[in-house]
Image 1 (cartoon, rainbow, N blue to C red):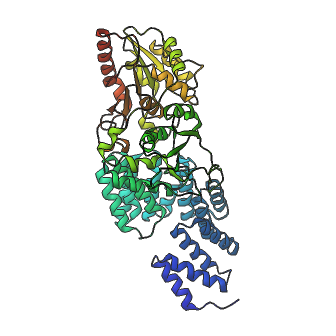
Image 2: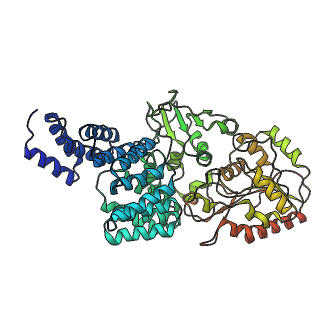
Image 3: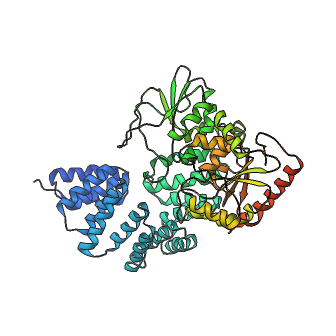
Length: 553
């Protein structure tokens, strides 16, 4: 084993401390070529790889370090962090719990357990670990920042803000706290202030790209979009692809062909592939009509539930179920295209100004046969309004619940006479619906032969025969908007899909009903929505209609 000079060690350490991580990697690799079991060099090499976002190499260096120092709790924590950043959250969690059993609770272990619990949706446990970290090091800014993140994951915004402000008090230049304050401000629709915090945080961060700068830029993009700053917003929205697997934009697919950046498509084929949730892809697929106008062969890969609807809606495109290999790097099954682009990125090409949204609007073409079946099932229209309702998402959590309501909050809406209500809520709603029907004396027309979650083509046909859909922000809202029926969308705060406007630019048939400041969806349902619905019923009584949905706004 060759001797390592002190000068080389000092140069390597200086490179790490100066944030010159590429240089540090080269120097520590030289050290390790002379002494492969230098534990400190392996640890610092792991830190350098981590800072560069090279997480597979981070993991390998950390694993080698553990082989050298198997009883070092700090080394165990470094390896757990590497597993966490690779999305191996269960393995990271188990490793940290083993460390607690062997060595007791250390500060770094508590901090890392809090982070991993967040990814595993163990938010209450995460809060307990965050509190323990503050107990162990009460004046450590990072501990208070971590505690704020734990409160934020539980939807406890006021307590989270207090923790982040404490962090800044202890360490004014803490970039993580400024980013987190920005995220809180983003979620409460204080977008200008959020952007200021994001920009401030970036000036405090290293010039290199890290997970922290990526998170900052992505959330800043959401606030920019919410203010109508479309060019900058779309640029930062792309950082969502660099977010950890459970956040940002997904799935993180790889291809043999380049991303489309606006090249001519004449004589070429382009794949447009789905991303994020069902509602997101339906929202973004509105821009496919713009892409089709460029003359190329368009291939759409989407959620299998909307394949029939998209084939009918975009008959000149090839529409198929999304297919890619489940194992990273998620390569495509098919390679029959010259370019590819995730569907959300189409907006960066075709929705760059407020006027561009004039080209947007409903685009779903529903099944005529299914529509006739549901029209018959609903019966003669007469003076009554056919109104679909949806009160929550299928994905509920402490953070998301503020956007939804229990069905019991709809009592005053269901009391409006002259309305034929139709249940559009997906998932198992039997208990909720039976309870509401019994308590409020209303029929919700919740037919058991309709699969509202998986048969979107049938659901869209049902919606097409309604006069109005009243909903919170779920996939149902996007389906109804795409079908073209009037939608009353209840929302808590100005969000990015409004692009700086009071209405919903992508769909002119959507009426936005905002919750009062500091209030809840239940408050809208108590007074505003019933009053608006009663007014609509009175209008219908004056001008009855026999067929086809109205354009009610």
